[in-house]
Amino acid sequence: MAKHRTHRTHSIAFKRQVVEEYLAGETLHGLARRHELSRTLIRIWVDKYETGAFDEDAEAASTLQEYEARIAALERLVGKQALELEFLRGAQRQGRPPRSAPMSVITGPKASPSPKDAD
Image 1 (cartoon, one colour):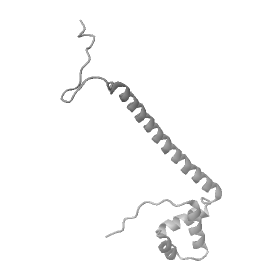
Image 2 (cartoon, rainbow, N blue to C red; image 1 turned 30 degrees about the vertical axis):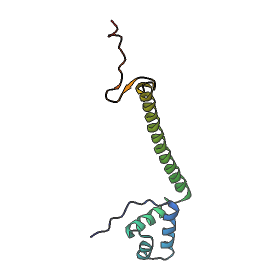
Image 3 (cartoon, rainbow, N blue to C red; image 1 turned 30 degrees about the horizontal axis):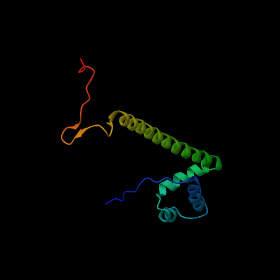
Image 4 (cartoon, one colour; image 1 turned 135 degrees about the vertical axis):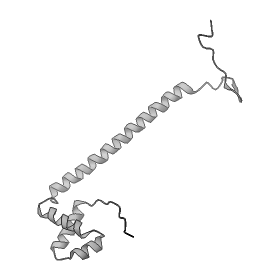
């Protein structure tokens, strides 16, 4: 049966470290085994490294992207919670009878007469 691996993300610093170990003479097999990575992925990282994709500007841009994504997720969460609070406040204003209102265990609160019934 094949192993199912979860999707992992790696920092640019980690990718750079792995590539530099490879360029220093470490074998693909040894690196892949030690870091639990595929050899193909390491080859892709080496190609990107050689084109300058792992330089400090790219790392800063990647970090900024991660922060922006996290901020967007938190903003969505805050918006959702604000809507839930507004809904609950509205329900609270409309639904709660005064504590002094007569209640029956069987029927609940007594109905108040509507303006139509007053005629």
